[in-house]
Length: 271
Image (tube, rainbow, N blue to C red):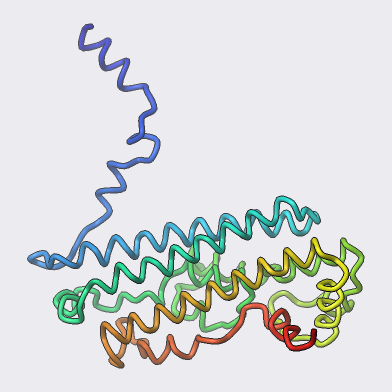
């Protein structure tokens, strides 16, 4: 085989490396330590992996919302189940970070300068998709920039629970009109009338009840990840301020035990 034939054969073939763009991917880890400090590579890879999983979760939730609004229970369930499974992976990655001691982290921490997980645009977008409406989510982003636009748009369109409301309406459950037509840019508040509908769903619509439990799984999974995250930060830097000016563990602790779907938790005590 001539060199031209070899080039033609291997240059045009889709390979594992070309399909996944492995060469480009492996060039994205750039430790800033002069050494470099050995553990900075771990820190970078784990957080880059988090961002990839956030991208996948957003991808799955976009599909789930579309399916819910069409009333498709069968396809919605595995999409929501996949999100829950990914959240379990996010929790397990904390175990990897916790193999790094406080001394090891502090050997390169100053290289982060003002960089902070608080600045993760994808996580802010995820929070918005799950229903959070808080201007502080975007006040550190450049107005008019792509990152600002992504989070702002997510804060002004239907959240996941709004799509569930549309799903329940399609199944002839009597959702209050003001909830159905609510302003998506405003924070959703727990609603007793909605809770009465949810109780009826649990009692008389097993298929929809199964779907609601998937939402509880996701909510519980997110709270579990937040808890493991805050304990990991406490274990690594104690109560010191975080990079980027955040209050570190104190800020993260304030996010604990705030359910994404408060109505689904409120009805637990009403059965």
